[in-house]
Image 1: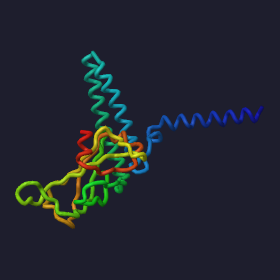
Image 2: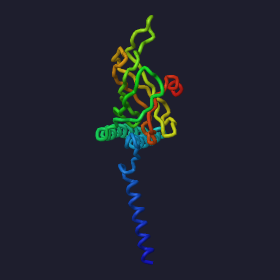
Image 3: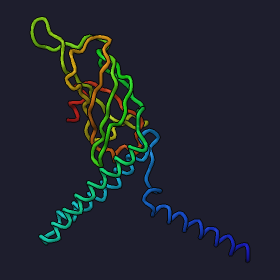
Length: 211
């Protein structure tokens, strides 16, 4: 009988600890192998802001509506601060990627520049492998801009966001072979990246399918 009571107490203690941890904001934040707690933090705030917006849409009281709108804006500001704080202490500097298209340049490295509850911004280091030309004039001249198109996928290769992203140069051309440069761009939906496996650089045609 004593053994039974002791076992029951141990089980009860375990349940209490589990419930406590699940109720703790930091402990319950999901973690991704490559993006760390960023997707979990984004999802936490996106859910809170979404609930406030739902309340706001259903609200018929003007005073309460102003209050809900203010609370949603405060949450959005808090989300930006928490995510910036997390990235400052946990920089994400080496994101896995696969380049399937465009032999004019080679992606060398991708990092997270910044993020919010709704968007994640990337910087890609690039090596130009062929002269990048524009379509103007005869013959074409060197281009001052070029773009790369990207999607985030899980282990099965399925896209995790509703739309794909675009990374672009910042007018540092002309872009000639053997030149090194950077691309900057973003994806919406960091909260959807809990199961993130890698970025895949795709063709413009594939990108246009999800516009």
